[in-house]
Amino acid sequence: MTARAADRARYDRATAHLDAPVAIVDLDAFDANADDLVRRAGGKPIRVASKSVRCRALLERVLAREGFAGIMSFTLAESLWLARSGFDDVLLAYPSADRAGYAELASDPKLAAAVTVMIDDPAQLRLIDEARDGGREVVRVCLELDTSLKLLGGRVRVGARRSPLHSPAQVADLARVVARRPGFRVVGIMAYEGHIAGVGDAVAGRPLRSRAVRLMQATARRELAERRAEVVRAVRAVVPDLEFVNGGGTGSVQHTAAEDAVTEIAAGSGLYVPRLFDNYTSFSGRPAALFAQPVVRRPGVGVVTVLGGGYPASGAAGADRLPVPYLPEGLRYDPQEGAGEVQTPLLGSPADDLLIGDKVWFRHAKAGELCERFDALHLVEGDAVTATVPTYRGEGRTFL
Image: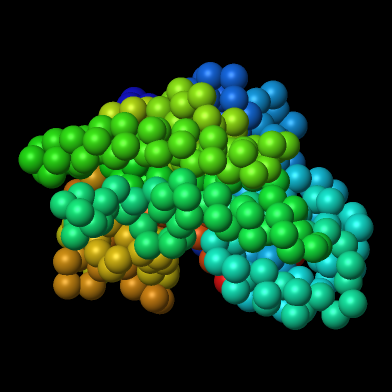
């Protein structure tokens, strides 16, 4: 029996009492992935990206482990909810226009001490001030650096379109603006190198593209390491007591951790290891988060139909954004139908061994987005479900 077949047998036994659709997290795999992230971080703390987990119980579990400290959140409403729930170090990774949230933040000492918001433009400071509604608490801010690689005098850009702050002078200038503005304090710098951390460099069947990605990433790492160090020096000249410099992501943990200027690493997807993280040479993890759909039809030889399953991930549309049929091995989509909203035909010889009511296990393309489809995660240890915990959705929280 292969390792994957053994996993399928375990998951089927563990969830035999549960009707599909159902989502699980294999805690042995989850903990092993956490250990691997800590190993790659080389002693620097890992801030957990909540958008990749979206389950308070699992955030608590990983933050109880040595090597993890703090949360990187994705909306201001989520940040405030987490802080009210007892998480005392929450970095909002994206600028917000949530005026009601800012009013709450600026009027509550506990929230103001626990939550750091992201800015990259003086206009965001004005929006926060206009939203204060009498709140006088000092708002902790983090400055985001644009990590994109610019070539040919800026005519070619590689990387996400995020912050407008690219040079050390631009980031330092914004730090001065914040320092002169009452009610704000710069506490950190963030730089997320998505073109390095979030792009696989070993895509099956595409050796030339994979080599091009590796060359691009090597160039980008060198350029960013030099520029990030210059940015930190420039900002520390304005803010000597800077608390943290955050960088990285699951795909670049060890590379980012090697930079002296970086004090902490961000990672989250590496805990669940969705399918988009199969294509990396820098690490390999164990799939920990899966969902099962039930077989409801057997249309013919080599075909079964499961209920639902059309859970595409965000990003540029493409086949790589679809969940992948994972267990039993050897199933594939019908190219004329793909993953359907209500039903999904699956092709392949393993279909002939599946009966009505059997489970087919899938892996989502991205990590936390799976939790937007399920209100609970069943936590599996060995061949048993040992706990069932709510996702954000299960707690009535759908922030985006």
